[in-house]
Length: 282
Image 1 (cartoon, rainbow, N blue to C red):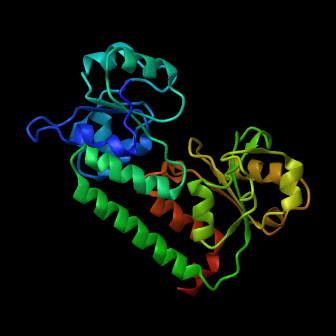
Image 2 (image 1 turned 30 degrees about the horizontal axis):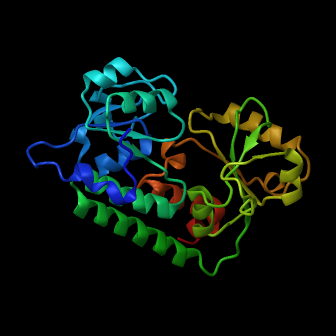
């Protein structure tokens, strides 16, 4: 398999202008980035999880990481396949057919900057990539300045099923979510975890006593009735500051957990949840 590390991404970027690369992206963040660079037309296939922007609705779907439609992949004749995470069958398939693979390894904000630059070179949009990176940095710097002198409440971020308060996954050190919490003026209560996305016990949560809880439920529709049920789950846990003060929030926007240039929106939303006083002061 032709893997493309950081120093070798120019292999495809050197293609002739009249022969642009045909790209398949299984990672939603990579598809978003490529479209944001003005190269959405180069995407000949995406996973079923790639739903933004709307232009992707017309792009053929090839399944997911665990169940890719390999016949469709071959029929699309890609010059590059972008993978993220575990995808053994597709990796082996690409190796067998000598299809170059780019591994999307975005975990931190710095990883995002590197990936944008590399994807920019791969799709011949280096100028647009530099502009995108500059825009993200500028926006995040502005948010940092906005909250610099404010108190930093303890924040818990969660990924879990809404069916029960159990099997709670959070964001540890080295994740863009943890970094965005800090940028937005909070303190991630599990920032000391060496695991990127650790599973944490309810006892640990009570012990760290978060003042703000942000629950990412991006596949859910949270109406008033469901919200009340979710809050009852937290109240049954015991004395937690965020629950007692009514600062448990549910975010359902899909971009919240996708490390693309839309992380600016995630940062802004975190500011409103962590520091609602800023909105009241306007």
